[in-house]
Amino acid sequence: MANLGASEQRLGQSALSALQDLSARCHDSEQGYRRSAQDASDSDLRQQFEQLANERSSMAGELDRLLRENGSEPTWREGSLTGAAHRMWVDLRTALSRNERQAILEEVARGESAAEDAYDNALRQDLPADAMQIVRQQHRQVREARNRYRAMAGAGRTTSRTGELAHRLSAGSESVAQYVQERPLTSTFAVFAIGFLCGVLAVSMMPGQDRSYSTRRYW
Image (cartoon, rainbow, N blue to C red):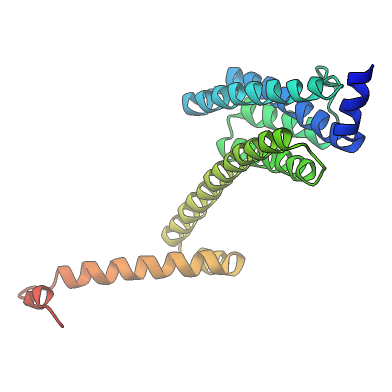
């Protein structure tokens, strides 16, 4: 009992609760990503989900050890997470069942962002030095995953919009005008890029053009 009392003095209840929350999220993420790997028809996503599941398993083990060293136990049980954390996995499985890559990437980014918020909360607690070091390292891992999937999701949206603009260009002026009204920033950039490429092609095709100036040096 004396050891338990010393642990409670070393780590307060709010800090213990924060670590228990992180442990539960990591255990839940491990199972969620393993199921996602089984459901994914995309081999690249399947491999990424397996790697994330292994990573979260290791993170959960570290957190569980910290909890036990500080006189507590992990509270996670399968299906114990509810609310937004649970809905994210439901939405991800729905996107996987429909093979909607863009929606899959967005759901993973959303889930990692929620996990980062939980780590931000834990870092605000009065944690011992060893616990703080572990939580900071895991926070970096979650943030890197969030940034990676957010960038992948953003790239997918940009590709989709560029494809839509190309389709409307072939469809006629009214369709292009409607696209510009709906997405002025994306369309401005795309039109500029298309205009620039057309200009380069036009110059390159001009007969008898003297291009010796391109080799000149200026000091």
